[in-house]
Image 1 (cartoon, rainbow, N blue to C red):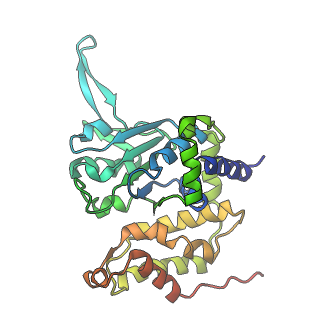
Image 2: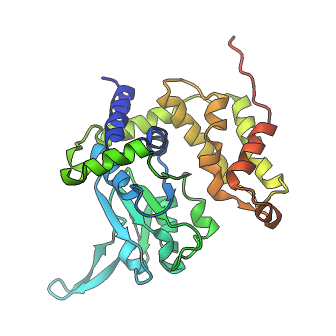
Image 3: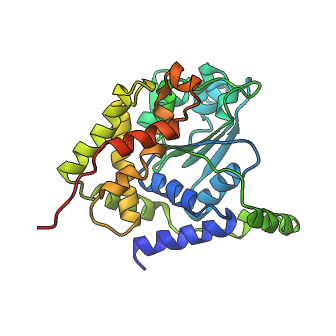
Length: 314
């Protein structure tokens, strides 16, 4: 069984736990293959934590969960040094980020100071405490859940932190049929209990290397850069996507192409997943918000306006 078959089997197993969310599962797995962090923006109770737990099991990842509240301190995440009398020295105590998969639950309920502790962690995948830098395990992912804006007790994530997430996704409510199945399974225990390791960490790192080798034509590079630059020129967007958005779109498009069994990125791999990689990086203009426009509608308009390149076989 090759790596691609292993990943598709893994996604099929996840689909038995997270019902009716096949497209979401594919998007989340693609983010893992692209070595990126994931932001799940949704209301409580739709299965975000279950999804993170399921991923840690099928990928054999050590996971830590932090329930973010106003009293969570930066040192709870990064770690701290404590004096050990028997050793007559300060000994470093690892924080929650020293794992393969960190579930940052309701990340926008904690203080900006604690949120900022994740900036270095997410970008450089390292922690600096007391002047000493420590590398995190590889691979390392953050799956953060965020309550809807305006919810009592929430603190908006700064743009610098939003920009560090590869994609922003929403689970949404299950369908009526899937919700009936969930209701019938109440007495069966946790749905993730039946999951087992399907892809090892070494295999995941190997697949990530394969994804990085997916070819991108110059015309595709021009296309995706033009799409991102349009977010900076649109009258409906006050703050457009940064160059980090371009890099995220490149990595995400490569992962999607790999999942589809292609050796190169096609225009659809960029256009179809443009919103997931870019929406959380932009801020709509006051007029667009007053007109009731959504980020989805504005980004779809940009995709429709920018001509897709036509790749011809030689």
